[in-house]
Length: 608
Ligand code: ATP
Ligand code: MG
Image 1 (cartoon, rainbow, N blue to C red):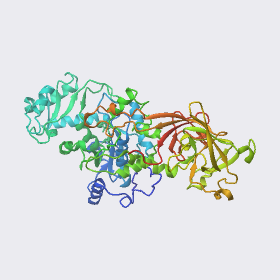
Image 2: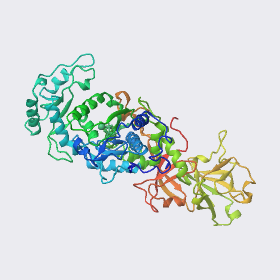
Image 3: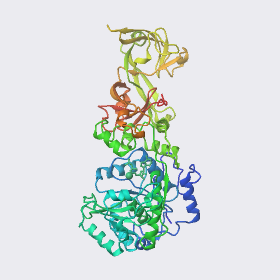
Image 4: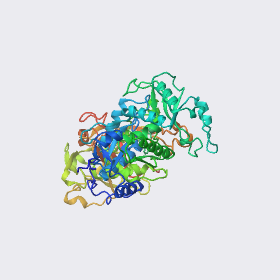
């Protein structure tokens, strides 16, 4: 029997296979539930006909080769964000680890807000994160709107069995009669109609005989239930809207709470994992499953819903509506602005799939809400890039350093070749080459006329090493009329070049990075900072726009070592001493227009 695996093995942790999952990952409550179900054989007799469908359809199938089925069900109404990444890694990761399958399903039952632009971006995001939903004979994601006909049939079956009725109260009356936590609801006068009356009415709704909002179909459960979600929830409404998949076929649409359990059941999902705000919906989920199994419409055993705490990340907003507002009001350059917590934004910022998977694993899943510190996310990127990013030198705030004795020591016009490892722990990657001459660029902050205590870099009389180059001794600086430093001066100490026998003959306390004036290349570098300076920008009903950080982007013209001009878009680097940078995937042009984004600093500075 072949077990379809739902994700490619993670690049760096190929040890997680379908056969030995339990030992390799820290456990959590969801893993325990799944392991229990597998041991108890809860879903062992499930059949799978190769595609979603009702009880009769699934009965024609063989035993489901997938040991579990999970799903990731985004509404295609915006770009996915880091919170969705957590959910993707969780659902696809569980399926992968337990020999199951995870379905990508577009929850497109709401006709108004959805768009194929979002559908495509979601497909890209899931693939980019390293996951795959394709199964033998089916490469397409599922679409909830494909189940509208079944949902309609299920609604009629509920009506015929006396479990649903058409309510013609006004929305205001319905709201008032629902009661509240302390007060039971009041039965609608329409609640006692016969199945035949209700069926006729519901068909009129479907046939377009009634105005939008004039009536709804409600499940008939318990108007006195302490769980308000069980006080006869609405399950179908009239809405004349063109749907991106079904066009004008329907003028009635199922409510999310009715549609979602049915989608899960038709797809033979075993573990339906959602965020905590759906906890109160679980009794209705179970109620609906039981009724539709009784009617013979759905296969048994039904899926079960489990809730976990959504990701809350400090300094970050994860509401699609608010992210859309940032885009629409031009607070950022688009959904993929490198300051956005969207997956496209994180990607452009330099985040890797490995770093996001590591993040999801590190934060784990819990049953109670909490805040994750933004530095945890940054730490995961740093960890990944430290091992994988090539090294390079760059000067972000350049001032010229003149080696005044160069001509007499090295010979006028001489350029001395230097080399440095591409990665200090991967000698097999070879070396970068660049040259040093009479003039080099250094960071303005590496020179102090009057050094503060503990400053070991350039000041008159002090010696430092130019990394991968020679030891130099600072002699002073040249200033313009405003006292602004225009050049730093130093002399080169002969026979001290890195890697030569005399290199350690002179001891220095400071090493500075630099780029040669002869072969350095000018580059645009976008220095990003957090988008919000408020730790919880939208907590407690605050106007989140007021928490925007006005300093979140500073663009500088840097000088970078020559190898960087040939960086590929999206290639990541550690600029030595400065941080991790990525060649911008949109604006960087290899060889002619270098543009780099700051991905993350070398050390955690977020709390400061
Ligand atoms: P929004 O309210 O911003 O539109 P949503 O939760 O409605 O977000 P969906 O497209 O419905 O967005 O979400 C798809 C899946 O992603 C859901 O299963 C949801 O539970 C999960 N998800 C969304 N946001 C988060 C989050 N912050 N943390 C974890 N999972 C999340
Ligand atoms: Mg939603």
